[in-house]
Amino acid sequence: MLHHGGNVAEVAKKYSIPVGLWLDLSTGIAPVGYSVPVLPAEVWRKLPLCSASLIEAARAYYQATDVYPVSGSQQGIQALPLYRRNLGKNNGTVWVPFQGYKEHEKAWRSAGFPVRHYTTLPDVEALSHQDVVIVINPNNPSGQVQPFGKLEALHQRLAERDGWLVVDEAFGDAAASFTSAIPLAREGHCFVLRSAGKFFGLAGLRIGFVIAQQRHLQALILAIGPWSVNGPALFIMEEALNDTRWQQTQRRMLEQCSTSLHQVLKTFLGADSTGTYLFRTTYLNNAEAIHRYLCLHGIYTRLTDEKDAIRFGVPGNSDLPRLKAVLEAYSNTDGVS
Picture 1 (spheres, rainbow, N blue to C red):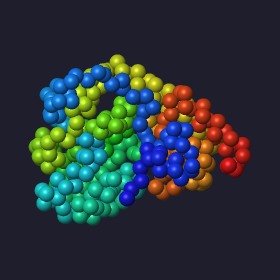
Picture 2: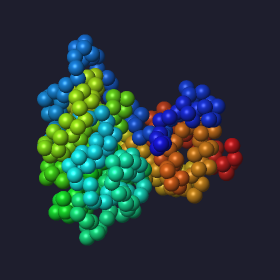
Picture 3: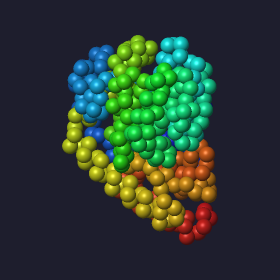
Picture 4: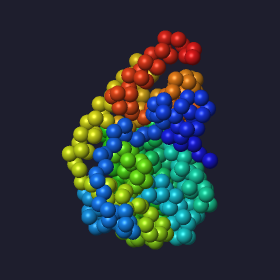
C-alpha cells in the first residue's frame, strides 16, 4: 500500500494530538479553494452526464482539442495501463521517474508491464518497440520542469516505435516557466493528465481530465463506464473553468504564498527549495528528524519516499506564521523537541 499525504487522522493518533489542532501541509492542494456556487436541485436528482458546455469550457481552459473528465487524474493513471493491455500492446518497457508520484509505477506493474526507472529522461535511442514513458511535469516532489522540445523529441521517437508518452501535469496550473505537452496529444501517441482539484482547491470533488485523441478517449470512456464523475463535480467544475477572473487572482495569491514559504524554508533550514506555486520541496540530510519535529508540534508535511526531502504544501498567509515559529524554534535548538 502506498502512502499519501492528507491522512491527518492517522498521524494525529500516532502523535496524540487532536485532529483539529493540526496544520496539514502534506498535500499540494491550494490553501484557498474556489467558492462553490449554489447547486440547482436538478444536479442532485439527475444522472451525472457530461455536458457539451463542460467539454467546451475544458477545451478553452486547457487549449485542447479533445478532453474528457474523469474521477480525478488518479482514474486516468489507473485506466491507461489496462487500456494499453487490452490493445495487446504489452511487449514494451514502461519508463517511470525514479522520484515521483508512485501510483504510476503501481498501476503499470499491476497491469503486468515491466517497469524501468530513470533519473533523467531516457535517451531516445534507448527506446524500444512499444515502450511507454511516464513524465511527471512538473515533477512531484522535485518540481523539475521538462522543456517542451525534449518532450516533443521523445514523443516523436515513441510514435515511430508504436509507444506512448504519458505526461502527468497535475501541478501544471501552478508552475512557473511551464509549457504543456497538450499539443502533442493531438497526434495519437500522447496522453496528458490534468488534475482540477489542486489549483482550484477542490480535491474532494474528485475530478480531473484526460487529454488525448478522440479515438482514445472514446475507448477509455467505454472502459471506465458511465457516471464516473458525480453531477455536483461536473457542475462546479464548469463554473470554475469559466471563471477566468478568479483564476488570475488565485495564481497571484499562490505565487506570493509560494515565494513567502521559500524564504521561510531558506532562512530556517538553510537550504533552497524547489517546486511549484502549490508546494516547495527542500532536500536535507536530516529530513526525517525535521519531519518528526514538525509532527511533534502539530505540523504535518510530506516526507518523500526516499526520505531525503520534505515537501511543504503552500500554507495560506494566516498559517505561515505558525510554520515559521516552529522552524525558528528548531533552528535555535538544533532540533531538540
